[in-house]
Amino acid sequence: GENVEQHPSTLSVQEGDSAVIKCTYSDSASNYFPWYKQELGKGPQLIIDIRSNVGEKKDQRIAVTLNKTAKHFSLHITETQPEDSAVYFCAATTGGSYIPTFGRGTSLIVHP
Amino acid sequence: SAVISQKPSRDICQRGTSLTIQCQVDSQVTMMFWYRQQPGQSLTLIATANQGSEATYESGFVIDKFPISRPNLTFSTLTVSNMSPEDSSIYLCSGGEGDGQPQHFGDGTRLSIL
Image (cartoon, rainbow over all chains, first blue to last red; front, side, top):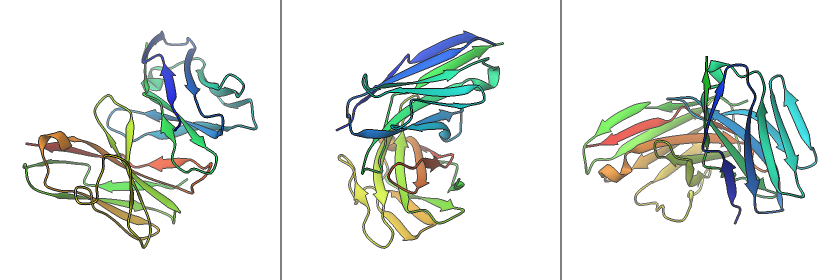
């Protein structure tokens, strides 16, 4: 089955800096890659996603890149703000499946 | 995107009792799922709730312990039966349209067993 590795497990940055979270996947048939943000006491919230026919996608301060050859994808957050502090999960879904495989999560801390 | 509501948001239960968690979606969704999340950990899929038929359970989860109902395309329940302290966790419901589509999550039920 699919295996998703996520790094780092913890990331601490200063407000205004950029943050990058990286994930690798094992199944070359995976074709859908969502990213979720989970704030304390809340459920995971979809923040951005990318499909395998696209190399990069942006939404304001958030971007995701996908390298299918290397089987890795990354979340980039620019101009970080304290409200970006949360746990971020990447996931990969194999074509024909409806069940994503989640990474283990990254705790992002943005210091004011 | 679908909005998912879960009830209760938290509960403290006695060992040996059962609790039913409700999940309501504000629009019809093809797929509904139940996850467990230990504090500080990732999400573990318990089962896929199938409308009008028995749920599909993942390895390590059984129907007798986690019976699931899905009477229609907007509602599902998960029962945690004969609870023990090891069942203390966050239980999350999600819904989505399946292949290549995002899942949307509720805020979870925080369950503590004494």
